[in-house]
Image 1 (cartoon, rainbow, N blue to C red):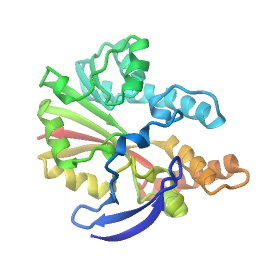
Image 2: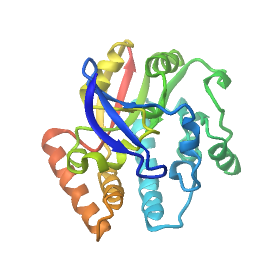
Image 3: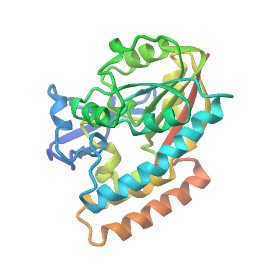
Image 4: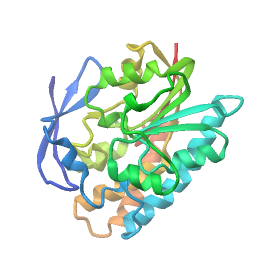
Length: 275
């Protein structure tokens, strides 16, 4: 592996990390990986583990999240003629599963973080802590919304998740794309690197190669338009820019316009099918 980029944990610790390119898979790997990785998730304002609306960024995140949740359920509905069994891996505070359940999906969820599980429980959604607590081994759809980049043993995790899918079942994976316009624009300040919480960083080719090794075929790819705006806003904040909101909006717009030509959106949803 060779060095791709040096960056740091802009959100919390300020510690420095390197992104090493895995040329065999066209993905990046974060080095070093802290032994006490859990402590990097424990900040009170880690947004995916809370429902905070205290800051402007929090409120923007929650507005975008609400829109994206509806879009995610519509995507699931398009895959099958009727709602069936769904497992959400990395379910956060449970909002996606609550909406899917309202749409008649039979839902289960995994969330390793105890604080997020408690937030979900208060909403009436009982989540499990890990795969070992899931009894069913035959889900029609398994979703990982910005989760794959957090998993330590990538191949082992994918193999275990795949075994929970029924034959011809779908795996839906959303991850940032390090070849997006905004990633090139912000370089070491790109918020979607989010080291060291993000252990892996994916490209379109990298995802297809990674899952083909596990006997899964790419069914379709969908853009996540709002991610470019949110990530650009955070990136401008990390740069300590004046007028970060306006600059972030402009960069997000430019990224999406560029991606309409190249397909390299800031984040992408990959729908993969068990062969």
